[in-house]
Length: 284
Image 1 (cartoon, rainbow, N blue to C red):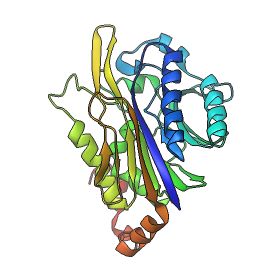
Image 2 (image 1 turned 90 degrees about the vertical axis):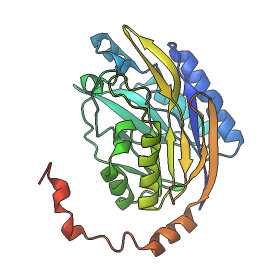
Image 3 (image 1 turned 180 degrees about the horizontal axis):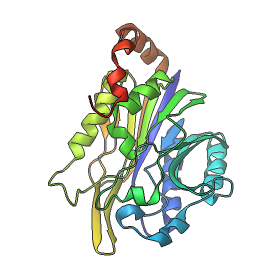
Image 4 (image 1 turned 45 degrees about the vertical axis):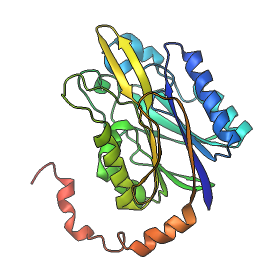
């Protein structure tokens, strides 16, 4: 099965409608280039509101049953015959989640809730989000199994491995990452290297979609470093944006041939699950 996979890198404004219109523009551009799937950055509807703790921002959350954003992308997915993983701030019954709805041909196939929730200056996600209760999810689509982690999920090898064991053939990581206001570190290469490792260790392509630009908040600011990329099943970069440009990256994969290579390499055959008990402990 050959599949054209695309991602979008873009800068967000403070106006919801502008962000939706910009995302639509790039989705339509990818569709014209033959994309089967288009990945947008994490929480693309708004500027990254987690820089500060503010109870008023819970009003940004949407019930999936009435979400204007999801309804909009259901229609676009159907019109363009696309698979669209759509990031949104989800309002549950009593809790709030950082979620992805996988939409295929106009239908919401399921919703994944972010499992690992970070905290720290400018990344105050534990204030807003309850840790996801869906478990890691692989979505069965017409092009194959799509495994999705959200931002902080991408740093954990367990995320990628479990998605692979559950039948993923491609790993997607929508994200919002940039300057570290506390750590004296530029984490861009570290960020890329971890996910390229997921691709190589599990023998499948990885797409990571980030935002760009400086976003100011009350007494705070962040500069998102972009550098969105597509890596192949060996962990090699196939295409990559720089730290500031906006646009679409697209690459065609033969997922059937990659599956054969994954089988023949023997990594999954030779796993020693009888030795992996320590993974279930915080420390030993």
